[in-house]
Image (cartoon, rainbow, N blue to C red; front, side, top):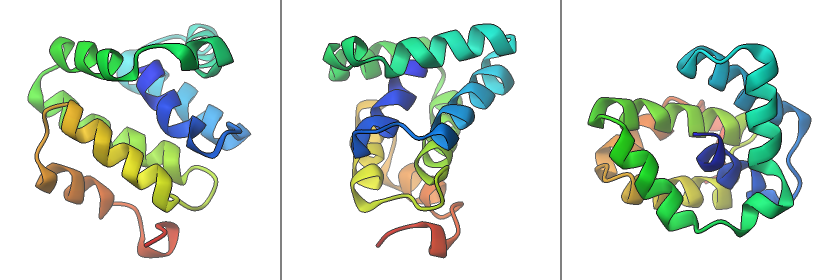
Length: 124
């Protein structure tokens, strides 16, 4: 989960503090990691060496470990990371679209999650 969230956060090259905080919060809330462990996972995930991982395989492994409902709910987390700095950019939204496809989710799942972000926080 941390690695997939980091894919979205790294789209703009620099991971912002608010993106990092959103990732840590999500790891604590959805994966019940204590704050210290969640921070460690997020830091490892956004590290430059982690960016060299096979992104396709990372997402597919995550998909295989989760139920359909868990994967669909995870899109909300990805959009929260994208919008953490106030605006989900077009490139971040497109990255989430690619991730959704690799998570074996429908386009409607993607749209449903995207529309949960207010219009003024989404770049068209």
